[in-house]
Image (tube, rainbow, N blue to C red; front, top):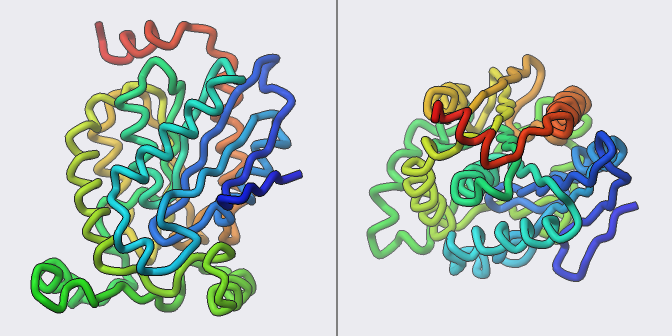
Length: 289
């Protein structure tokens, strides 16, 4: 049963994976909410993992609150989530969706002694999917003008979801006025600028990620082209597995192939739980030391 806290984070205690306590920290995307991670979290909990879906600062509230939140605050919350799981779990895996995948990669790079594995779902280094308007590049120019703070990235069909039934339910939730249920209808330019700054920082740390990684991306992602994952495959220093989805768009945790994603994630967790090599030593071996 989900333990939804006052800050909208979700905690699901597990019973163990491979005879040990294994924690899974899940991070939602920019303008999103922990709810978008719940289907995956439930499947991982059913497989025995302790799962925490953290709520990034500035999210689940107003656009103004999100616009004035720096990316360092998002990352601080991710570190706090790691600390919470590490208190009870001998091993922790971190995963994220879209921008959340970048925060997960940064955590894996900077906390190699605490993070056993990395899961990147629809990782977004660039907003270059097929539904992004051709004039989207103008935002980088306009954001530094006097009108920049008033600009926003408006959600548009197909809203990251290929399955029409699921999409209709998500759109209803988005228009309900409760941003904690399905995120904001538009992302303020200030938050997008912070994501660009985060992306620049994460790119500098990718070669430090030596843990095993699982990358999941839709071939026809409407928000972030598959080339985002191909770039990460080349840059990450550890073993990389990849799953390319043929019948999903950007929100792979809620779209029609979410059960396939969950099954692959659970297999990844089970394999990590079975690996008894001490984490610092495994990192050295992956790096060729």
